[in-house]
Length: 121
Image (cartoon, rainbow, N blue to C red):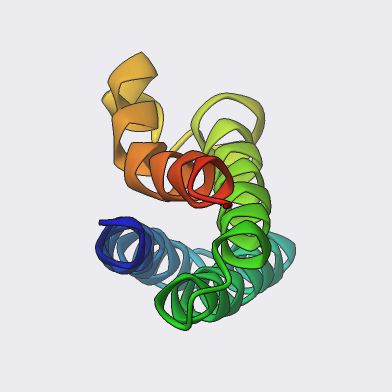
């Protein structure tokens, strides 16, 4: 169950950040608003979280649940930071329409991390 939730978290977050990046790329064409730093932040958070979730899910599959659980938990926390930043702190607040329910998209990664740590023998 842990690896599946980790990969589900990867899919959720990649789709969410892909939409966010496409929106920023379309806004970048506006002359008055430079969004290149937002694009770099979103890309970095997506890349780091995705690699950590994939490696963590692989570790859980290879019977090292504590390592994988810690990786997935850290990736979930990183994703929560990214979501909070783009939903409530950045200008424009592109993910604000999700509201608090947007954190449910991050739940599979966090649950995967907790179950991986709990499965340690």
